Image (cartoon, rainbow, N blue to C red; front, side, top):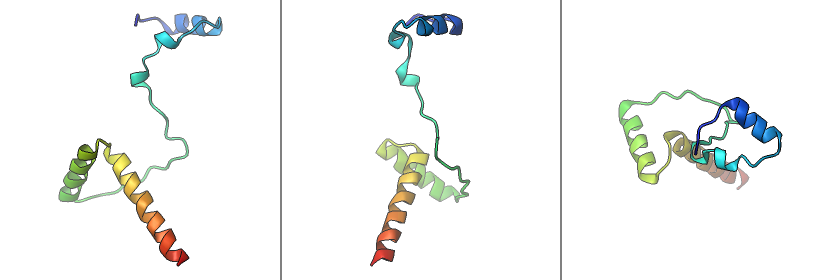
Length: 82
């Protein structure tokens, strides 16, 4: 993939040319639209264990914690419904 300036890319895109080959999708990121940021302080041992578990599962620490919270909230909803 050859490098190009933003102006070149804009010209190509605006003229309707295919820009797919000019994009590096491996570097694409999604935004955190609709997400909130929480700061959580953990002890060193907990942080180390969480990081190891995330690595084992092939997830980021944020993804793992988010999954765990979602799972726990679902359990709480089910318990409250009983």
